[in-house]
Length: 212
Image 1 (tube, rainbow, N blue to C red):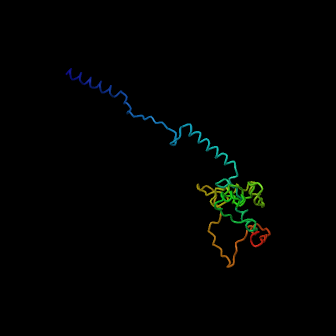
Image 2: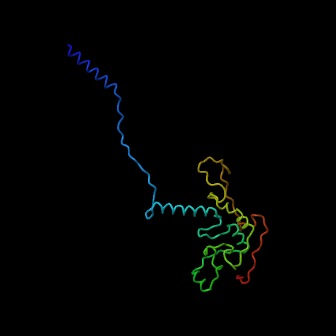
Image 3: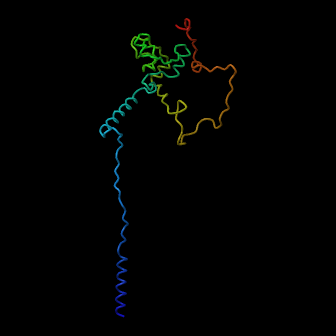
Protein backbone atom coordinates (compact mmCIF):
# COMPACT_ATOMS: atom_id res chain seq x y z
CA UNK A 1 0.00 0.00 0.00
CA UNK A 2 2.87 2.27 0.85
CA UNK A 3 4.51 1.47 -2.50
CA UNK A 4 1.35 2.42 -4.37
CA UNK A 5 1.13 5.76 -2.55
CA UNK A 6 4.76 6.58 -3.35
CA UNK A 7 4.17 5.71 -7.01
CA UNK A 8 1.11 7.98 -7.17
CA UNK A 9 3.03 10.83 -5.52
CA UNK A 10 5.94 10.54 -7.99
CA UNK A 11 3.58 10.45 -10.96
CA UNK A 12 1.68 13.51 -9.71
CA UNK A 13 4.93 15.43 -9.15
CA UNK A 14 6.19 14.58 -12.65
CA UNK A 15 2.93 15.70 -14.24
CA UNK A 16 2.98 18.99 -12.33
CA UNK A 17 6.58 19.65 -13.34
CA UNK A 18 5.81 18.97 -16.97
CA UNK A 19 2.81 21.28 -16.80
CA UNK A 20 4.89 24.14 -15.42
CA UNK A 21 7.61 23.98 -18.12
CA UNK A 22 7.06 26.50 -20.92
CA UNK A 23 6.42 25.13 -24.36
CA UNK A 24 9.42 25.77 -26.57
CA UNK A 25 8.73 27.78 -29.72
CA UNK A 26 9.07 25.89 -32.99
CA UNK A 27 12.40 26.38 -34.67
CA UNK A 28 12.24 28.38 -37.87
CA UNK A 29 15.00 28.53 -40.42
CA UNK A 30 16.25 32.06 -41.10
CA UNK A 31 17.52 32.73 -44.59
CA UNK A 32 19.90 35.62 -45.00
CA UNK A 33 18.95 37.64 -48.12
CA UNK A 34 21.03 40.34 -49.72
CA UNK A 35 19.94 42.69 -52.52
CA UNK A 36 22.47 43.35 -55.26
CA UNK A 37 22.26 46.28 -57.70
CA UNK A 38 21.77 45.41 -61.37
CA UNK A 39 24.93 45.83 -63.41
CA UNK A 40 24.71 45.06 -67.15
CA UNK A 41 27.21 42.76 -68.76
CA UNK A 42 30.39 44.55 -69.78
CA UNK A 43 30.18 47.15 -66.99
CA UNK A 44 31.87 47.34 -63.65
CA UNK A 45 30.11 48.89 -60.67
CA UNK A 46 32.08 52.13 -61.12
CA UNK A 47 31.70 52.34 -64.92
CA UNK A 48 27.95 51.65 -64.68
CA UNK A 49 27.49 54.42 -62.11
CA UNK A 50 29.48 56.80 -64.33
CA UNK A 51 27.37 55.89 -67.37
CA UNK A 52 24.12 56.43 -65.45
CA UNK A 53 25.29 59.84 -64.25
CA UNK A 54 26.15 60.83 -67.82
CA UNK A 55 22.74 59.76 -69.13
CA UNK A 56 20.96 61.60 -66.32
CA UNK A 57 22.87 64.77 -67.19
CA UNK A 58 21.69 64.45 -70.79
CA UNK A 59 18.08 64.18 -69.63
CA UNK A 60 18.45 67.17 -67.31
CA UNK A 61 19.98 69.28 -70.08
CA UNK A 62 17.22 68.22 -72.50
CA UNK A 63 14.52 69.24 -70.03
CA UNK A 64 15.91 72.78 -70.03
CA UNK A 65 15.46 73.11 -73.77
CA UNK A 66 12.41 74.01 -75.83
CA UNK A 67 11.13 70.46 -76.19
CA UNK A 68 8.02 71.67 -78.01
CA UNK A 69 10.21 72.85 -80.89
CA UNK A 70 12.89 70.18 -80.90
CA UNK A 71 12.69 67.12 -83.12
CA UNK A 72 14.26 63.70 -82.56
CA UNK A 73 17.43 64.74 -84.39
CA UNK A 74 17.76 68.08 -82.64
CA UNK A 75 16.26 70.25 -85.38
CA UNK A 76 14.12 73.25 -84.41
CA UNK A 77 10.66 73.29 -85.91
CA UNK A 78 7.79 75.78 -85.92
CA UNK A 79 4.28 75.01 -84.73
CA UNK A 80 1.84 73.30 -87.07
CA UNK A 81 -0.44 76.34 -86.86
CA UNK A 82 2.33 78.63 -88.09
CA UNK A 83 3.23 76.24 -90.88
CA UNK A 84 -0.42 76.05 -91.97
CA UNK A 85 -0.73 79.84 -91.99
CA UNK A 86 2.45 80.22 -94.04
CA UNK A 87 1.29 77.47 -96.40
CA UNK A 88 -2.03 79.24 -97.03
CA UNK A 89 -0.19 82.50 -97.69
CA UNK A 90 2.12 80.84 -100.19
CA UNK A 91 5.19 81.42 -97.99
CA UNK A 92 5.86 77.76 -97.17
CA UNK A 93 5.70 74.41 -98.87
CA UNK A 94 5.98 70.76 -97.95
CA UNK A 95 9.62 69.70 -97.66
CA UNK A 96 10.90 66.44 -99.10
CA UNK A 97 14.20 64.74 -98.24
CA UNK A 98 17.09 65.26 -100.64
CA UNK A 99 18.89 62.19 -101.92
CA UNK A 100 22.69 62.05 -101.83
CA UNK A 101 22.70 65.38 -100.04
CA UNK A 102 26.26 65.16 -98.72
CA UNK A 103 27.78 64.31 -102.10
CA UNK A 104 25.76 66.99 -103.88
CA UNK A 105 26.86 69.58 -101.31
CA UNK A 106 30.53 68.71 -101.84
CA UNK A 107 30.15 68.95 -105.60
CA UNK A 108 28.54 72.40 -105.31
CA UNK A 109 25.29 71.25 -106.90
CA UNK A 110 23.34 72.23 -103.76
CA UNK A 111 23.71 74.86 -101.06
CA UNK A 112 23.17 74.05 -97.36
CA UNK A 113 19.86 75.93 -97.37
CA UNK A 114 18.64 73.63 -100.16
CA UNK A 115 18.67 70.76 -97.66
CA UNK A 116 15.48 70.62 -95.54
CA UNK A 117 16.18 71.74 -92.00
CA UNK A 118 14.88 68.46 -90.60
CA UNK A 119 17.39 66.53 -92.70
CA UNK A 120 20.37 68.71 -91.87
CA UNK A 121 19.40 69.06 -88.18
CA UNK A 122 18.98 72.84 -88.33
CA UNK A 123 16.27 75.43 -87.80
CA UNK A 124 13.10 76.03 -89.83
CA UNK A 125 13.98 79.70 -90.40
CA UNK A 126 17.55 78.95 -91.60
CA UNK A 127 18.99 80.78 -88.58
CA UNK A 128 21.52 77.95 -88.23
CA UNK A 129 23.14 78.89 -91.56
CA UNK A 130 25.38 81.87 -92.13
CA UNK A 131 24.61 83.90 -95.25
CA UNK A 132 21.36 82.03 -95.99
CA UNK A 133 18.10 83.91 -96.51
CA UNK A 134 16.07 83.85 -93.30
CA UNK A 135 12.42 82.82 -93.34
CA UNK A 136 10.03 85.50 -92.11
CA UNK A 137 8.43 84.92 -88.70
CA UNK A 138 4.67 85.18 -88.25
CA UNK A 139 2.97 86.42 -85.09
CA UNK A 140 2.08 82.82 -84.26
CA UNK A 141 5.79 81.93 -84.51
CA UNK A 142 6.62 84.61 -81.94
CA UNK A 143 3.85 83.41 -79.61
CA UNK A 144 5.07 79.84 -79.96
CA UNK A 145 8.67 80.82 -79.23
CA UNK A 146 7.67 82.94 -76.22
CA UNK A 147 6.19 79.99 -74.33
CA UNK A 148 3.39 78.77 -76.54
CA UNK A 149 5.38 75.62 -77.22
CA UNK A 150 4.45 74.39 -73.74
CA UNK A 151 0.91 73.80 -75.01
CA UNK A 152 2.33 71.32 -77.49
CA UNK A 153 3.68 69.30 -74.55
CA UNK A 154 0.17 68.57 -73.25
CA UNK A 155 -0.30 65.07 -71.87
CA UNK A 156 -3.75 64.88 -73.46
CA UNK A 157 -4.12 62.51 -76.39
CA UNK A 158 -6.67 64.96 -77.79
CA UNK A 159 -4.08 67.74 -78.24
CA UNK A 160 -4.40 70.51 -75.70
CA UNK A 161 -5.80 70.30 -72.20
CA UNK A 162 -5.78 67.77 -69.41
CA UNK A 163 -5.06 64.10 -69.90
CA UNK A 164 -7.53 61.28 -69.42
CA UNK A 165 -9.11 60.98 -65.98
CA UNK A 166 -7.73 57.56 -65.09
CA UNK A 167 -8.81 57.86 -61.43
CA UNK A 168 -12.38 58.99 -62.12
CA UNK A 169 -12.10 61.74 -59.50
CA UNK A 170 -12.28 64.73 -61.83
CA UNK A 171 -15.55 66.62 -62.33
CA UNK A 172 -17.33 65.56 -65.49
CA UNK A 173 -17.76 68.18 -68.20
CA UNK A 174 -19.41 68.27 -71.59
CA UNK A 175 -22.80 67.17 -72.87
CA UNK A 176 -24.48 64.21 -71.23
CA UNK A 177 -25.71 62.99 -74.63
CA UNK A 178 -23.50 62.70 -77.69
CA UNK A 179 -24.49 65.40 -80.20
CA UNK A 180 -25.71 64.31 -83.60
CA UNK A 181 -23.18 64.68 -86.42
CA UNK A 182 -23.74 67.69 -88.63
CA UNK A 183 -24.18 67.64 -92.38
CA UNK A 184 -21.90 69.52 -94.73
CA UNK A 185 -22.97 71.25 -97.90
CA UNK A 186 -22.04 69.69 -101.21
CA UNK A 187 -19.36 72.30 -102.01
CA UNK A 188 -18.18 72.71 -98.41
CA UNK A 189 -14.58 73.82 -97.89
CA UNK A 190 -12.80 73.66 -94.56
CA UNK A 191 -12.05 77.13 -93.14
CA UNK A 192 -8.50 78.38 -93.14
CA UNK A 193 -6.62 79.39 -90.00
CA UNK A 194 -7.12 83.08 -90.87
CA UNK A 195 -10.88 82.59 -91.24
CA UNK A 196 -11.11 80.83 -87.88
CA UNK A 197 -9.23 83.68 -86.20
CA UNK A 198 -11.39 86.29 -87.97
CA UNK A 199 -8.48 87.79 -89.89
CA UNK A 200 -8.47 89.14 -93.41
CA UNK A 201 -7.19 86.36 -95.60
CA UNK A 202 -4.26 87.26 -97.81
CA UNK A 203 -4.08 85.73 -101.24
CA UNK A 204 -0.96 83.72 -102.11
CA UNK A 205 1.72 85.66 -103.91
CA UNK A 206 1.83 84.99 -107.61
CA UNK A 207 5.01 83.36 -108.82
CA UNK A 208 6.50 83.72 -112.28
CA UNK A 209 6.06 80.43 -114.14
CA UNK A 210 5.41 78.82 -110.75
CA UNK A 211 9.14 78.92 -109.97
CA UNK A 212 9.97 82.37 -108.53
